[in-house]
Length: 201
Image (tube, rainbow, N blue to C red; front, side):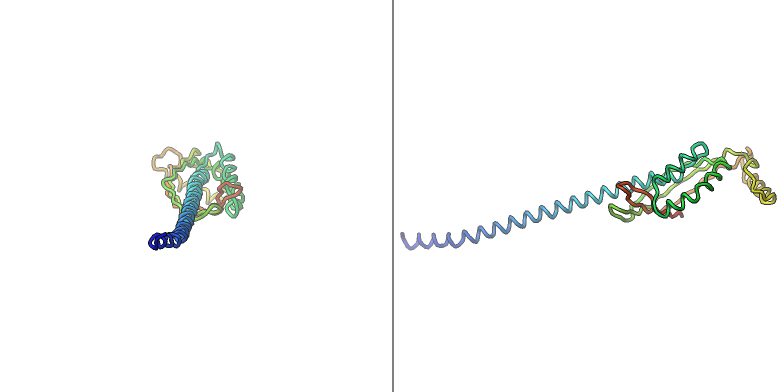
């Protein structure tokens, strides 16, 4: 074997292990990148799913809370109980009888429209959303026919005020339109979103 051939063979023997090592490093780096970006994509997908779920739940739950009618009052109250937890659940249950009496007394039919809902923060177990809501309340009990409080002076003042506000003079309180900005805190219970706290502005 000539000196030149021997030299070339020695160079190959020297370079091949180094090339193999470099290839191994490149392969490891590529695998790590795939795993990292794959995990990142999966995490983002999970976060996106939780966010979308919270937005949908917030819209549905607040609609239940803000919509009520004398003909469906028991179902309306029960439907909110099913989607509430924590402090909100406790407060709702305490106030149910008062809400029911007020709705039946006034004949109030309230409908609601969710104008917008935005995700503020959260994860798979809790979330905060903000909603813009319009409500319209119509009354089917004539002015003066509502249940009395027992205080004649207060009842007369309330009736007089209602008559004064009756602009179309049909004998019923005029419809009332309101706009609310609602901050709702949701909690995941057994895989389902429930409302834990609500602040209205």
